[in-house]
Length: 68
DNA sequence: GCGATCCG
DNA sequence: CGGATCGC
Image 1 (cartoon, chains in turn cyan, purple, brown):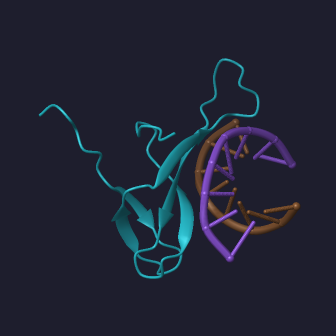
Image 2 (cartoon, rainbow, N blue to C red):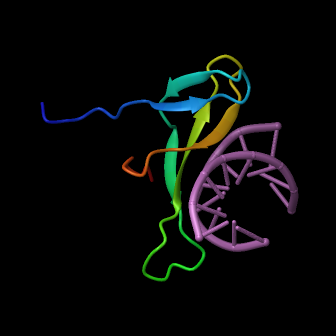
Image 3 (spheres, rainbow, N blue to C red):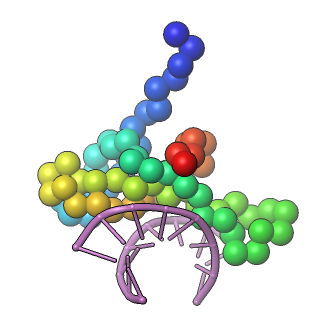
């Protein structure tokens, strides 16, 4: 059992205004427009509010794995 | 404003 | 096709 299950991300549901731990449905990274050597982009995760079922995006930690 | 990505 | 996400 070497598999590490990813911890849920603490995000604020804009629909409820509550901070909830959710696992991102999809995660990707916005590359910096000028990808010149440095400048990390921002990792974005797609979530859905458990209460309203609405979708929203939020930043995820830089160490989060990317879903393709 | 751009960069990726998805849902209305 | 737009809006929304975050950093520069």
